[in-house]
Image 1 (tube, helix red, strand yellow):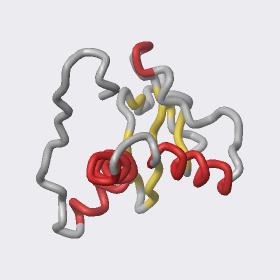
Image 2: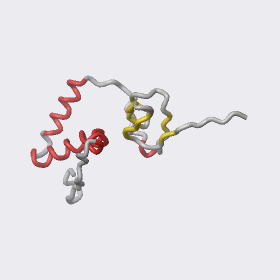
Image 3: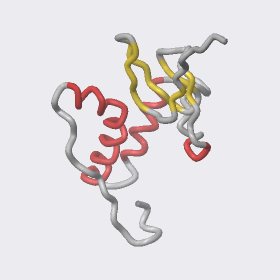
Image 4: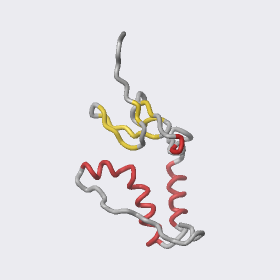
Length: 111
């Protein structure tokens, strides 16, 4: 009988294998077509393998979101969203963000 080793990832985020970085998501991996990913069904919407989006329309959508509330509220929220996939590289460079964004508000206050 021949045995072999197989890695199945069960999380999202960045991984490095043989000096190659790739990003794991519910639909597989960006940067490594051979990576096998099996993520809990509750995270199935974290799938980046679907429809391709136009960069300009995505930027326009982010700009539209910025107008939902005051800049002092929206800037930290949007910055944190964009920080998440970059956090691994900030950590490696010695600049890991050391904060927690916590939203507080009554029900139906659009938090």
